[in-house]
Length: 305
Length: 101
Image (tube, rainbow over all chains, first blue to last red):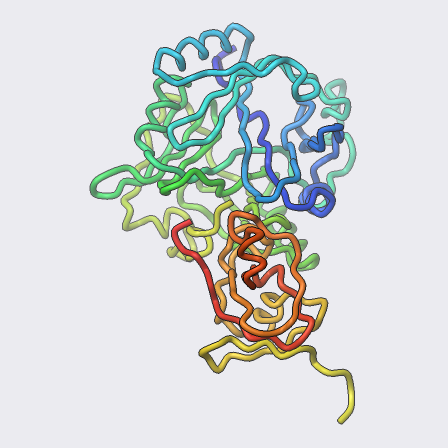
């Protein structure tokens, strides 16, 4: 296997104010499949094109935001090697037992320099509704709503972008695909563990916050379809449809019913680990984030959960 | 006089802004529909705090709001997020967004 260590974004657990209202949004509108509801209140979802049992976890709470994001690693031995490397860097690592999430093996967890909790896991059951593999149709059942294929990435706000960049590149073996440099420091970074333009991204902010969770669509036409649904069902629109200069994704942003920002996007480029980093000057940030509008807005910059 | 009333009158204190709002509409939605921009529009979901206001006068009910922006104490003092604020009478509001969170 040419990709080793951290393979991909695995799961993200998101807090919502009302679980039933959130389910309507994530299942009927975004088009995720409901995997199961557990006695502790957590609800598990997945995209139709994902093989793993689940990728999105919703939890009802009195404030929205993100509890944890998990990355899948290639093998159980990777958990031990990453645990050693993280510990040697002076960061505490805790263990989460197999089965704490249904169908998921042992996890290790730690707090990254921005203040967010990240976990790694090696084993997760395959979904009972996973895409077919024997003489497969293009999908198991026709996709719903925005036809989100998969959980793709998250963007987090937090302090100390240089430190979190070092953590992901030096300890977790990610590559920096793009970054934004202010005259005195890097203020934003996009990181890839495999061949996507990003699996996680960070923007400088005083406190650890959640900016968005993103789902992948098959085409620019599907982004337009998502925009139609956002208007038809009066979903809270943030910005788009538009395109990013950074990562080149074709995109639309909106909010879930608890105020967590969602993105659905298509396109972007394939990244290889030997590719150079694309670097933006902060004075070009507007064009980098919104390539057509060429300017940022207060809501996109300021609304976080 | 004929037809149903347009709803309650929502006035933003210290301004000339006023717009109608039905009992089932959130104040923020009614404000957006009315083309008024006197309260900041964020997530519209009770999560971000952009549309935090203080209700200076009037009766109302509220939906679920993030406790990071309106906790029990603030709620009892008349603070609310306009996207989760539903009028039961005419209201007078003051914007009360806390920046830097």
